[in-house]
Amino acid sequence: MSGATVTAALAGATRALAAVSDTARLDAELLMAAALGCTRETMLLARGGAAVPPGFAALIDRRLAHEPIAYILGERDFWTITLAVTPAVLIPRADSETLIEAAIDRFGARAPATVLDLGTGSGALLLAALAQWPQATGTGVDASAAALAVAADNAARLGLAPRARFLHGDWDAACPARFDLLLCNPPYVETDAALPPDVARYEPAAALFAGVDGLDDYRRLAPLLPRMLAPGGVGCVEIGREQAAAVSALFAAAGLGVSVRRDLAGHDRCLIVTG
Ligand code: GLN
Image (tube, rainbow, N blue to C red):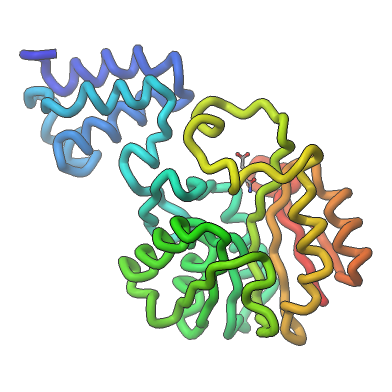
């Protein structure tokens, strides 16, 4: 692309990326801005006639190999915060913001004083909640030490470290403490599900897969959740779009009250549980 302008290179990259991405133009713009070392807005407003920076082609090649934009850029926005992400953690998805919306609706003018995030990964749910409720303190649990390092780094970057602590361990690692708000996006994908290559090749399998029916972790969580909720506490647990009935039954059998909330696409996405 020597001699090419940013504008021309964006058009060419958009055509190429259309083969692997539903958001080819946006991807090209984000990667160009990263290669230029400026914001997308600055690039679009002021750098169209500039020479293509040397690193751009390599970034496009990574995306053509299905690497997710969030891993290439090393960050992803979630709710009101920006999180660093590495391949050690699931990329935060807009779907999961449904859990924060559900919690905000449930608590209304009240605020949870204590928050637990089970399977915190990048720290997305925990840190979004701590950003939302400035008086709250929280605990993030993960079975992956590499994920917890990412989460702790994010807490520090966001100035939330004084209100966050992280525990390495299984679902019950924070017991016997109880919490006002419990957030959890467990693995829930069926072991043999056909996932897009961006997900299957790059995102951590341990954060995705949960047995042949995708319900293994819900079976393990169900008997634990009543012991983790403080009196009046609320749990917001992410589910796959077809899982509301099965997971509601598991949680109801453990004595929990359960209701369902949909995501912006209209799919069942969050179970709201009470003790
Ligand atoms: N929503 C994710 C996906 O479909 C799955 C996340 C999870 O298993 N917790 O890729």
